[in-house]
Image (cartoon, rainbow, N blue to C red; front, side, top):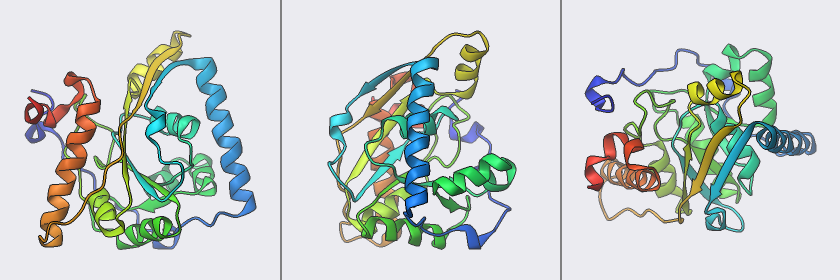
Length: 245
């Protein structure tokens, strides 16, 4: 089976450090303007280039703080989030984008994300995310840590669960369907509108049950990933498919 974890390449480990870039973005007037423009551009692009089915927007809390957890399929995930999330989150993004994407990486930095080094405990990124939630803001994180390589959910890492347990904020599960790069760019190359779906589940809380933190994070991560899996078609549930049968 292509979605068995034993057949997947190991999760990436960031070689780029750049610790000075990892901090909570300040919501200056300029950054608010950049975010406003970017979100409207995203809506315009999707209106022209895609047919988007949106389900469950009413499940988003009216205000922060809350934590958005998502699956991760491709580039279009970020565009869908900018277009439809009611509050612009402080998203955790891999530090590689800052240097690998050139000018676009600098624009992402201007938009305001929390840069994270993957494959290692990035305390700076976690502290920045917790500070965002403490201030009543919204944080978004994809627990898989990369685009899925298996056409379904991959095992989640513990960062999202740690943030939820430490902050006590509601967790809002969101899944993207149809946003794989080959699917999206394949349609665009043929000048066809891309069928996409964004589905929002009901928020929930995670609490420690007296376990050690490592045990609580492991249990909470499983809960997060199974919740995401229930929002996906069965064939897209990946390594969590059998657990829901």
